[in-house]
Length: 312
Image (spheres, rainbow, N blue to C red):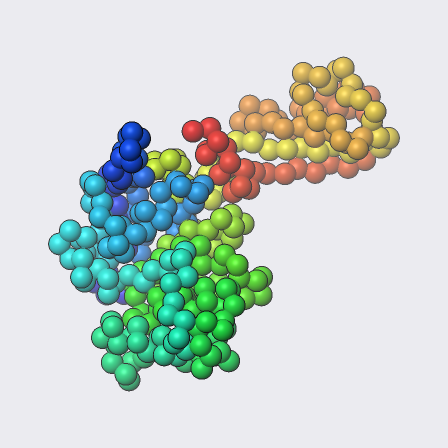
């Protein structure tokens, strides 16, 4: 995209403090977060409930005022260009904030009008079909299921073809088939040049979709890297050894490796940077155990997420 910035979103030292309630001190929802989302990527923003993800998104959307820091979207500064930023970003919120008396087609047409999209450039039917609502175009929003309403929120965020799309838990309550359909369309949008910022509690979803991931915990940035690098930093693997004859107890010769014993099978949790899997297998054989099968398990994003958020 000619003239587009290298960073679609750039956040520097972002902080947000909410006022005190009664005797309680002010609460810091964000505490000096710095990160950037590169143009054209699908970027994951993860964190436990209350970590500050939605606060950050609401600041980007101009719905919440920041306490400190700098935010720029598509090269536009939030403090100077708030109106222009709203045209550069489409936000799908967690809350189902739809007018129950409009049909999906009417909602998209009204939204397009609010953004000044000329009638000839509107893509209402295309968007409704993409999110699986073509057959519900004339139904009132109040008659839609929760999953359908959530998909309608995604459709609303797309009417003005924003270069940056923010999805805040877009698939909560959406069944598997429709979730796959939605992600297929998001990938298509991304292939056309749309930058996507995604928050989700489906960690496998983030691992599959996102090139890079940031993890926020208690208002601070706990990590930001590719999924592969995050898992590598976690430095933990599990080696599962199935003996030819099930074991009733852990042999004394293996006690220093602290294996877990389950259904006669040994599981060794180890750090690849410190221990070689071959050394573990050699120790098992030296203990006189005949090996029937061996499997390994590398950490996934859930392991990394829990390790970072529980340690804080």
